[in-house]
Length: 149
Picture 1 (cartoon, rainbow, N blue to C red):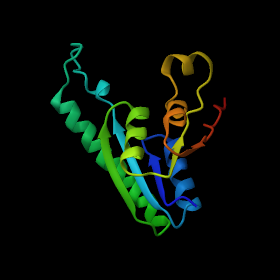
Picture 2: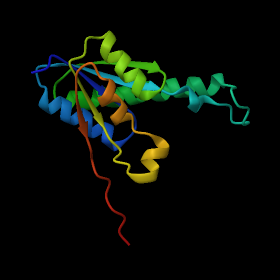
Picture 3: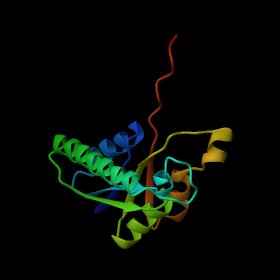
Picture 4: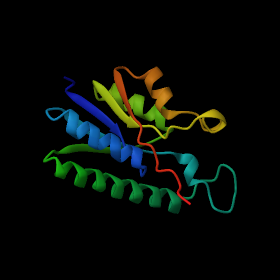
């Protein structure tokens, strides 16, 4: 069984499902939870390309801290401690870099399950991580409920 597990964590239900999977499956492992802040999200609200707002950056970091606190609360349900961290960059590259730098044996991440044009336009973080990961990867796909009318 893998000894160091990395869970990529954001505000999505898929990331939460990935964390639950890792905590319930790898009970003896050291679990790392990583939140990646993408600087493209810090662009100034006035629309100036290439201008990053320090206020927005700070809000992003505060949000990341809250998310990691939520992850820690989930781990408490499993009576498990986590190693949490944040980094800045594009998600796939940052996840793979963290895995390499921290000798991670296995990565668990949620997939949004996009298909077709939306996948082509938005790309697939999960696919890029699988292709570049130094170790094995488990993709957790939690289907979103269908809209009922």
